[in-house]
Image (cartoon, rainbow over all chains, first blue to last red):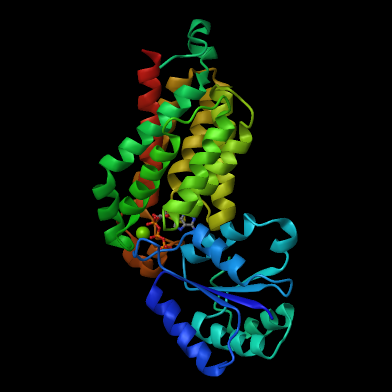
Amino acid sequence: MVGLVIVSHSPKIAEGIRDLALQMTPAGIPLALVGGLSTGELGTNPEQVLEAINQVYSDDGVLILFDLGSAFMSAETAVEFLPEDKQERIYISGAALVEGAITAAVEISLGKPLEEINQSLESLNVGKIG
Amino acid sequence: MTLLSRKKGEHGLKLSTSDILEIVRDIGKVIEDNKQYLTELDAAIGDADHGINMARGFRAVSQKLEGMRSEDIGEILKAVGMTLVSNVGGASGPLYGTAFIRAASAVQGKSSAGLDDFVSMLDAAIEGIKSRGKAELEDKTMLDALIPAVAALREAEAEGMSLVAAFARAKEAANTGMLHTKDIVARKGRASYLGERSFGHQDPGATSSYLMLASIHESLQELRR
Ligand SMILES: Nc1ncnc2c1ncn2[C@@H]1O[C@H](COP(=O)(O)OP(=O)(O)OP(=O)(O)O)[C@@H](O)[C@H]1O
Ligand SMILES: [Mg+2]
């Protein structure tokens, strides 16, 4: 199963999204949350994203969804710290976070491959990347 | 503080690894002193955390460098970058972190650095920031201070100026670029959500970049004494 990483500035956003996604996928999926800084403040940092990726990583790959601003930069930086063969199996999607997370969670639970899930998320792309 | 080749005179001025450590520590002090100011600037057009983020990052850097012994400037700058990446907690973390990490590769294995090395380091740093944040000149970011500063530094090098004099020029250019961020509208970062309302406000990241360059200039003057 593909792993899903949610990166948000806020722990409440990350937890809320997890709750929504779990309603749709009661059997659970490999999901890791990065919500805010370990100091309790709002923000993101690459180190925490890296830990989250490693928690849910398998050869099936990992999909990362993020809220805004530095969340994307932190995700990209984290991916660069991984060995190259792993990097290839990690996609960062610019999809709207809530809708993207629900869509991804459902498709992950159906056992779809990373490329296909990433493709379905394209229609939810809100242009956060680039 | 010792200058590796003080005898060589102004133009051949080269900094040792301990000079570089001193310069980074000085930057940390300047950031700490301006924590409030940077946060106030960010409160006007962002989320009021730039000073807090930067101070958190550089406090971690100071701790990391404490007692660090290295004869490789690249190794020192890489440690600075990695520490910023893990500790800042905002956009400036991956941006400045990547900048220092890229600057490190420009001087990897070198135990001394002159003006030409500073030009290479800063060039690499800017490329790092651009590729990380996808911003350009006039987007109202740190790049609006850094890009003109490095252009000035390169010009000064071509004119055969000393390291200190070159940094005086770079600092001036950074200051002008920083002030110019008041006259433009943000296209990247938090401030871009404000659109036109970001006009008239100075960008916090451009300000921290100016402060770092001004601090380097100050440290170089100290080192020359
Ligand atoms: N894409 C970018 N490219 C270059 N510089 C940027 C970019 N985004 C933001 N910045 C710079 O970062 C500064 C803000 O840094 P700060 O530490 O406050 O991060 P932040 O905007 O609060 O991060 P976050 O995205 O987590 O809210 C801005 O003033 C700007 O100079
Ligand atoms: Mg901020």
